[in-house]
Structures are given as structure tokens and as C-alpha cells.
Amino acid sequence: MSEIITVKAPVNIAVIKYWGKRDENLILPLNDSVSGTLDTDVMCAMTSVCARPDITENEIWLNGSRTTFDNPRLKKCLGAIKSLAASQKSVSDEFLTWNVRICSENNFPTAAGLASSAAGYACLVCALAKLYKVTGDVSSIARLGSGSACRSVYGGFVQWKAGVRSDGSDSVAVQVVDSKHWPEMRVLILVVADTKKHVSSKKGMKISAETSELMQHRIKHSVPRRTVEICDAIRERDFETFAEITMKDSNQMHAVVQDSYPPSVYMTDISHRITRMIHTYNDMQGSPKVAYTFDAGPNACLYLLEENVPEVLCLVKQMFPSSSNNFVTGLPLPKKMPSKVDFPMEPFGTDLLKNVIYTKIGDGPQVVKDDHLLDQQGRPKRYV
Ligand code: DP6
Image (cartoon, rainbow, N blue to C red; front, side):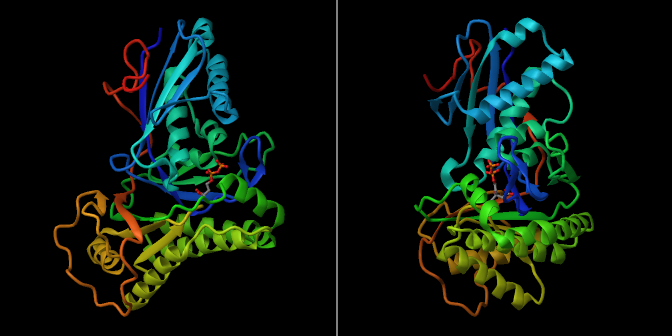
């Protein structure tokens, strides 16, 4: 019987967006993308796995509930790790016949549109890789779970190379710089109070790939240039260039979403108020000090340098008053915070934001010792 393997894996937030697939089945993207990997101490997925001869069928628990294993993406990830293990002869033939039990949790709300599938699949694949003792890059296997998951396999800033081969063997994630390269980089996630159900990114990007003319311009011209420029800006720690490209690329992804037929909308009125607030702030500063980016939902992710956190946090609180006494969570707050920012806009309204998560760039997946979600018999500790 196997030991229990537990891994925690990070969320990543793209600054050059992945939007559109050239192969739905292998999850191959139409364009390169680039992201920052966020600190697992603030937000992470955690997954325990084991394989045993006495488990009669593969089983999975997700955030407390037993879920069906009959999910093609999940099966593909397990199948790919097992065939790699078979070709590397990393475990015995008998071990490969045993079923697995998987228990996975996110320490942040799954449905909040906060890249939970990326962290979840990266975590699952890294835990399975360890269980089956496979070596080498597993980002292309994480990609089979959810495209953006391949970027959560590494820390720091990461590029997912779209690749050109039809078998997807060159569609992998590579690290641009590690988490120590730009130690001042911080992230504020503004979680918008929103109950609207948005079109899934899977469906939304399919419609865009099939119908948007702007998408063609994006993948041929904008993204190739921006990818080179933003990777250089990251290597040179050039925040102004980094910020401008990040905002333009988010705006373009959402323009593509609007240019799709039928169109979708992920950003809400509150999201647009956030962008207006950031542009006004950057104009006041004379150069971009904060960059916003939005995924397939209304939440804003702000990239900024540590020196600007006190003022920007104060500004967010001033413009989005909250009745919550747990409004900002995550990293310890700066010791010195201004009490007011001179700002030419009136506050927007109370409780438009649910909360703010303060975090930074962090490392890739890590093995966790002695804190498993499965007990020694391989049963979920907290659920039945
Ligand atoms: C808007 O990775 O969730 O967050 O590959 O279909 O699982 P699938 O999509 P997913 O798409 C994420 C898209 C995005 C932009 C990004 O993270 O690059």
C-alpha cells in the first residue's frame, strides 16, 4: 500500500491572458500567456492522494463532498501520470493496478472566480506525480485538467508556451523568473460582491475563437509582441511597462469577449469603477503605480509594488467603504497607513466589495509533511 502524499499548490493570475483553444481535447491554447504565481501561505489548494489494493474504485472528495470520478479531465490527468510512470518504470506493475483516493480542498471560495481550477489541477497532478514517482516536467499534464493550471506548476512569473505541435508536446509552462527575482511585487485581489452566474471560461473562449475577428488580431499581433515585452519588463523589474501591458491585455481580452457572437460580459459596473479609480490614481501619480487585470469574472486583481500598498489600500477602503470588520485578509498589513488619500472622486457606495486579499508572488507546489487530508487507512479525515 502506498504512503499518503500531500501537496499544496498556488493560484496564478495571468498578465497576458489565455483566451481560446486550438485543440479542445488536449487543451492547447491559441496564444502564449504569462502569469504571476501567488503565495501559497495566503491562497492555496491542498490535495492528499494514496493508492491501495483494497480501494474498489477511484474516489475523489472536493471541498468536503464526494464527487464523481467520471470527469474526463480528471481521468486524463490520472491516465497521463500513470502512463508516464509505466514508461519511466518508476513504480511496480502491481502498484499501477491499484485504485486511488483523492481528497482536495481550497482555502478560498471555489466559486469566487479566483482561479480555483488552476490551483486544484496543479495540486492534483503534482501530488500524483509524487505518488507515482515520475520525474520531469508535469505542466503539460496539469494542462489537461485546466489550461491555466499548467502555469501553477512553477513559482515566480511563468510563461505558458502555446506550442505548434498537434500532439501538444511543446505546449508547456516555463519559469520566466523565480519568486525572489522581484521581491517587492504585491497583489491585491478585490473580490466583488456579485451573485451573477457568468458564462464559464471554457464556453466563453470557445465562442470567441469561433466568432471574434478581434481575437484573430489579438493572437497574431498583440499577444506575440506583448509576451516578449512583458517578459523583458519582468526580467528588468520595469514596473511601468509591466503595468501598462497588463492592463491593456486584460482590456483586450474583455473586448474580445464583447466582440464574440453572442457576446458575453464578465466585468460588471463595479469592475469598471475599479478601472476608473486605478486610471485616475495612476494619472495623479504621473506614471502607472498599479495595474488591474480581470479574468472570467468581475473580481479585480491589482499588481503593485510594496511601497505603494499603504496608499492604495487606503484608497480602496476610502472608495469602497465596507461594513465588514474582516475586510482585508492575507499578509500582515503595512504598519503605517495614511488615514486619507486626496482623491478627486466621491466614494462609490458601501459593501460593493466583499473583501480584499493581500498577497505576493510565491513559489510553486510544495510537498506537505504530516498534515494529510487522508488518514492512515486512506480515508478522508474530515468527511465520510
Ligand atoms: C480568463 O484555464 O479556466 O483565467 O482550459 O477551459 O479549463 P480551461 O480554462 P481556464 O481559463 C482561464 C482563462 C483566464 C485567463 C488566464 O488565466 O490566462
